[in-house]
Amino acid sequence: MTAPPEKEAPKTSNFLRQVIDRDLEQGTWVARHWAGQPGDAAAHQQGVADPARIRTRFPPEPNGYLHVGHAKSICLNFGLARDYGGVCHMRFDDTNPEKEDQEYVNGILDAVHWLGFGWDAHGTSHLYHASDYFDFMYRAAEYLIEAGHAYVDEQTPEQMRANRGDFGKPGVDSPYRSRSVAENLQRFRDMRDGKLPDGAAVLRAKIDMASPNINMRDPTIYRIRRATHHNTGDKWCIYPMYTFAHPVEDALENITHSICTLEFEDQRPFYDWLLDRLSDGGLINQPQPRQYEFARLNLTYVLTSKRKLKALVDEGHVSGWDDPRMPTIVGLRRRGYTPEAIQLFAERIGVSKADSWIDYSTLEGALRDTLDPTAARAMAVLDPVKLVITNWDELHGQGKLDDCTAPVHPHQPERGKRAFTFGRELWIERSDYEETPPKGYNRLYPGNRVRLKYGHVVECSGALKDASGQISEVHATLVPDTKSGTPGADAIKVKGVITWVGVADGLKAEVRLYDRLFAVPQPDTTDKDFHEELNPDSLKVVTAYVEPSLAQAKPDDKYQFERHGYFVADRKDHQIGGEGKPVFNRVTGMKDSWGKV
Ligand code: ATP
Ligand code: MG
Picture 1 (tube, rainbow, N blue to C red):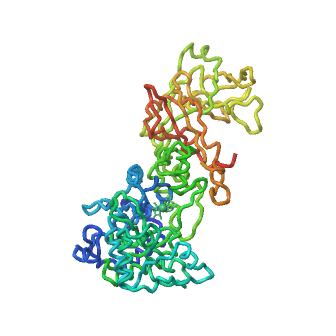
Picture 2 (tube, rainbow, N blue to C red):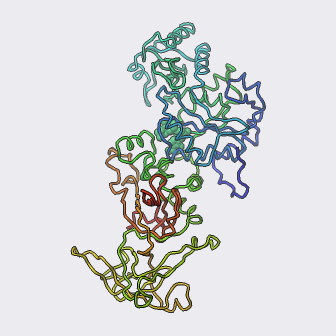
């Protein structure tokens, strides 16, 4: 557990902070005891006063890599625990007997750590697995049966569905609903002991088949499923349903605020019903956890569903979970996002109780705001064409180069200067020359003067074209005594300043220009198959020239390429020297211009 940094501005309040403030003020949780590990009422009561002022949890299912929506939940749950002197539990929700993939488990733990959070507090690791609670869950189920709150239903799934009713129609009681406690207990044990085939019976809570909330119409809490569980092997052939398991997990772990997304709002009455019953039976610690719902993150131009993201990976639409176009945490990381940017994003979008879509530019804005003060500057030419200074040899001598410098960061002189050379041949952007300039165009065209940033002023004299009519070389003459930083350099006024890289010392690099993964703002919200909504131009690879200071770039280093935006040395493919090549990913442009061109 880490204390909130002191100089950090106070966090914007939200309804969850208000709930916690009120709880702390009223001392709602002060009398709780903690066994030092998850446990039932008896275990906790023998423990010490809970050293955590609140307990939250982040409970992913290990069935894929985490995405930006999970990042919101991580920042929220771990952030609240940190800010309030609490603890956030890292819990794998592995009650489904699917094969747990160690790759996903490791990926999830890495993502949480990378975002800046951890689960060690008070000398203990709070990393838990829901499947460790199967024994208690079974005991809780038998208790419900004994107290007359649950029964084994042997209707067919079709009968059960038909008898559940719908919004306008109350449900119909199952003929098995009035079985005796003894008979229910026997049948439930038969289920457990493998005497019934898969699907032949379920255990249901006995609540109210006429409830206006369909979730309260005797929800299923256990089903038969012969499957080997990664943790418990073949010990069980019955498994708890999520709606039953989750509140129990929270109770055993002494969770105070169980924060989930809005789709679970209708489940809250069952959450409370179940924990009330288990409290009556003295099975769980007091006071019992409470559930609070917040709006899930929907981010434009991407999908936030592990299952659908997995489909994109499996079908080869992207290069992997860490493809820089993916909204996964590993994808964002490879794209050049930082933990600070994602935390700032989470802080800015806040938490609310109403579903909405957050524009992708909000994420990019948070990134720019965190990278602008930190990223070193560099010049790069992404669509290069050669500029030849035709009077260079005459003025400076054949083969001579002129040393130029520029600040590493314009507002941080202490970071020093970068050096590169100006010579007879330079790379410039193809779009910086126009034979017939459109109105307002201030860059190179015959007769116009521009400044080559940090270098000299040149006057354009024309261009050569190749056989296809494409410009192959732009020509200009140097205007003497105009070198940036020398006395009198500003005597010649120019309207345009362009960036460049010297042919003599420029470094050839692969630059990957990433764009939105989907072409529509809200993919997968209509009848259309989301595959058809993918942006066919989400990746363009170019050969660029970059200034020599980038020979120092290490994987993950971030730069602002002047005029172009933010770029990162790819964490997998970037290599200087040897067999490899420098590879930079575009993180985002200089400002939000998407869709405007
Ligand atoms: P997915 O469909 O992507 O698998 P999920 O909700 O099933 O999402 P879990 O692994 O069960 O994924 O989620 C772990 C936690 O992350 C849950 O508490 C869930 O509420 C939260 N979470 C998942 N998606 C979002 C989202 N888009 N916005 C905010 N929180 C989310
Ligand atoms: Mg899920």
